[in-house]
Image 1: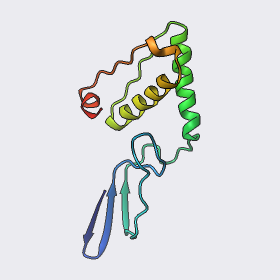
Image 2: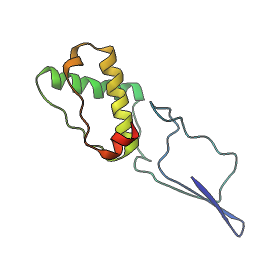
Image 3: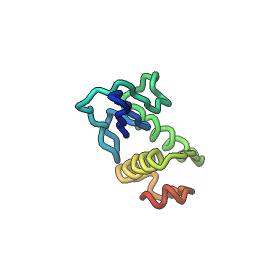
Image 4: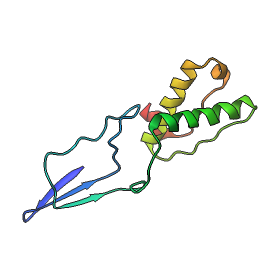
Length: 116
């Protein structure tokens, strides 16, 4: 996040952020100042999301169902934070459920590997 003051005009620039805690990031802080202009990444800015626990349960249910039927799951992720979050969700699920313990988790990303 960057704040720039240009002749008294405060411009705030930020990338992706969330006000919701997840497995590896704290929620974004509320700033104590008011910019005149805010520029923000907003891939899902107008989306209404289900609660995180509902999304995670659906994610792990689909994976569990697929591997229980002998299938395999490929999850393409391009952002390091997303890869870390998904791997942490899977690690927690694997820890709490004995059924998939013999199913390995592979990731093919030098960036993800360096971030774990």
